[in-house]
Length: 346
Image 1 (cartoon, rainbow, N blue to C red):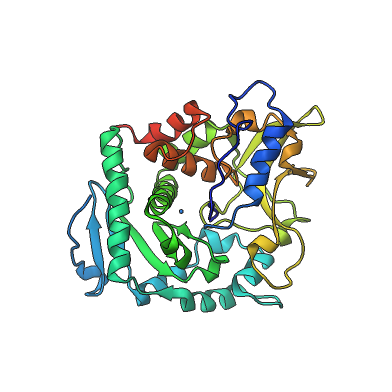
Image 2: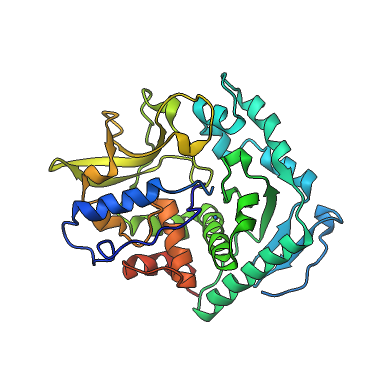
């Protein structure tokens, strides 16, 4: 769901190697970078017609992945699916994504979403194909290989208004590409494609990709984490990682605590878009205590400071994968970058 519309580069203090007790200035700088974020919610072959998707669609065949461009009608079906993301939406989510000042049902939301789906232009298809070619060529050069599952990745074109003007996001084995993404330069465009591919592969291969990369960041998987009822109405779900299923051990005021990362609304919905409400907090599941990230000791020494996109273990891992693959950002935590690439080693 969230990536950086403009990815801030960390300053000299943030590029300092991680120490056993990272300074509050590092944590605060990384947090400021996150708060500047705008939601993103993300080999040279000929197109091939795919009869199963109709004459308007094309497929870009990579080494192990077929990229299928859905036409507008197919995309409208895809965006209307009742999936894990829809199941995790709060009342605030439903209002935010429909722009409604009054309560919205899931059915209302699903009826509104198809209006945002567009057709791909041929230039847009070619641009996605070029980015995929770079990603797969880089993987091949580094001895990395895409997982066999899924064999196909769907691409859906939207205006992005359904996700507050975001760049791209994933649901199931589909990557949704929004208006604002196509306004970016080619290097950043390719970075987003790599990031979103990681989400698709992570979702389809949790034991091989998701959990090992998250564990490398210090996150611990729990069988079930209940979102505190007192906070549930203002929780914001991330389509790339909608469920709460991991905690991280930190300290608050010197006392050990287990907490999870959560995107919270600062107030009830009154109109506007996601940046008007966005808060990233650490939540203690039992007490429902909310903590700013800069108050947590031991957080950044686990998750690192290579990326300011620290919205969840999944988002950090996807960024580490894209950065490690494309080598397009300063790397402060090479061991974490290596952990994000390791599941794809041949």
